[in-house]
Amino acid sequence: MSAFDIYDLRVTVKAIEGRSVCSMSVGDYFELTESAKLRIPDGQHFCIYALSAVLPLLAAKQRDLAENDWLERDSLVACPDPEERLVMEITRVRKRTMHSDDLT
Image 1 (cartoon, rainbow, N blue to C red):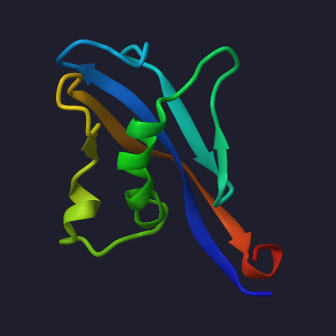
Image 2: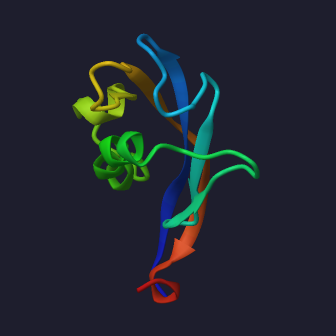
């Protein structure tokens, strides 16, 4: 079995600088755990357009990156809706060891 380390992530709404058209609030979040499990707290939602902006970055943020890689230093992502100007932050919440044989 081939073991590897991967981070669980939390994506949190840090700011809404325009008008909130998706009914989200600062502090709303989702977590990406165990490589591919998306978890949203009960009773909350996460806008699919905000989600689409952050999704391409998550696989890289789950892994250790080179010290000078821009994605290692940057953690803010903006929603594509220019009227809303919703800003999210990606944070690493825990590191876990997984086994590639357990995944597809």
